[in-house]
Image 1: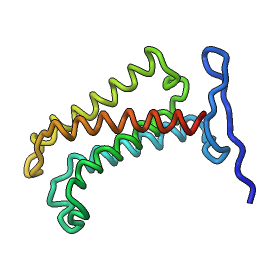
Image 2 (image 1 turned 90 degrees about the vertical axis):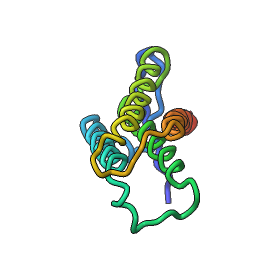
Image 3 (image 1 turned 45 degrees about the vertical axis):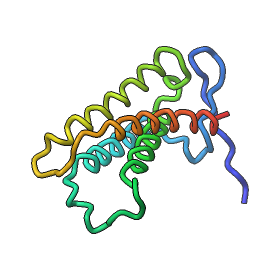
Image 4 (image 1 turned 180 degrees about the vertical axis):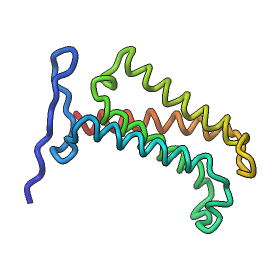
Length: 145
């Protein structure tokens, strides 16, 4: 089986940004739609009443914290896939990181406001949201190198 070739796109500076295997080369509107759907799903997951997930149970202590880290790492990677030139660094990259952190903070602020949700604001969740954003960005940079 042949490994798919990487697809590249020119960046604003004229250098080339590697975008990953050819099968990931979706049209921009499809990538943005995927990011929107993922964002809507994680918003629902993070704001849904805690009773929604009682049947699942905890697989290990601290599972909720790992979920925050993984969800935001995935969201960060997906945003990088949608906007590769923005992630290339500088002001734009900082703006994207700030927006993802603001999204995480907004979720944490909204959780106790949802009636009957049984959720609360937790600083550790917010910290792990930020760690997930940075981890997702770094992982995508390594994969693209």
